[in-house]
Length: 308
Length: 243
Image 1 (tube, rainbow over the protein chains, first blue to last red):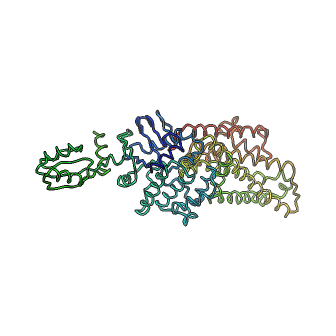
Image 2 (cartoon, each protein chain N blue to C red):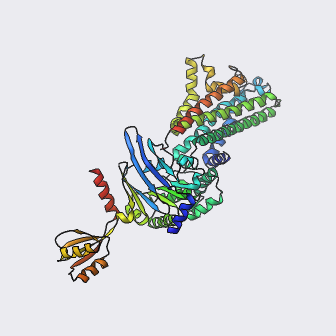
């Protein structure tokens, strides 16, 4: 992964695949995005999280040049989207489901995009194969299920073999197998050095998929951090000698919090390490349980704090 | 631009509605041509081909269908949301507007060629069956050229209105009401203005005996209407967000 990331960075220059800088977007009196800044890095999947109306879709539209910012800017590979020399070969995007003519076949839809982008028609068949739609390629899109439309959207995004993917709720309508397939596709894409910015409401899925997350609430940035930081592991330990055990663990450089008279929470440590330390110090342990903050818990904690 | 035109051609070709509309153009042109020939007193058709009343039949058909074709070039994209992938692939919006303008002009010209060809073939066959002379002269070629020009201009006007209005139903209903009734009403209220309205200018080019304006003036006027709509529509495309 490191090698791929480094290679990608070298190949694409120092610019971030996506950078949003002090972006504000207003519609009349409504501020959809408010002074938002974040970056996406090469070789990583970045989850873009927020409640409905948090400004995610508006931000993605500005990133992709479909909406003009009121102030601030958004760049893709160092340039505003409209200045990319060959956008379809740089960025693949899926903004919403259903942006297909229902009377056109899946293959015809891709062939239209391929023609406009100057991409050979052979790439159409490859993209259809890649998303598992080859068998349905000549059926009208109006007869596709939501999941099939999502796959066709992804085929559109992948058509130009881009370096960056920007996806808005790509897992909507996919069945569990489809979600697993999507996860593998995006992980492979990032592992190959590409960058993925994916907005989603499915927090468990983002936790399984993303390396980083950007959390927005009411148009403002709440947090940008690696998923591992937000879902950091901890260990809860019960001991009648909690005070002495806390001192022992602290002496080992661990961050220890009291959670009751006999209970400690040790951040960033494994149960084995805490148990070994207690044993070495000759201190009794009555309970030892690993704790892990789910992304969902972290998300609600952050956004509720912002709401106050 | 070639790539964008190819994409526009594929958009039109891969939707059945396009072929249904062309079929309707051909059918209406045939019916519109046959009806006056069959019902007219014999002496009214004993005139040279370029003076035949049936030559006026394709004018309104071309006006309406070219307008619809131009409107569809743009409003189909907004109706189905495909404007999003279109602009993602080609974020230079002036290029999208230019491609749609050319595609609309081509579709309007195609409507006109089809309607004109059907009218000529139908009318000539009927005249020949009545042992009446059929001679394709320069005047007939001029009529055909005018018809094609009118088709292209109305389609560009439709594309401009489509870019401006975006909403397909609103654009279709509004413009068709104008062509079928609105312009006649305005013409009745303001007779001095009537010859300068777009459908009136188009009639000069498609009906040999309408001479409110010279053909050159009518062509320039209709072109100006189309250009005005196009400028307004392109201005909106360049300035507005795509939601």
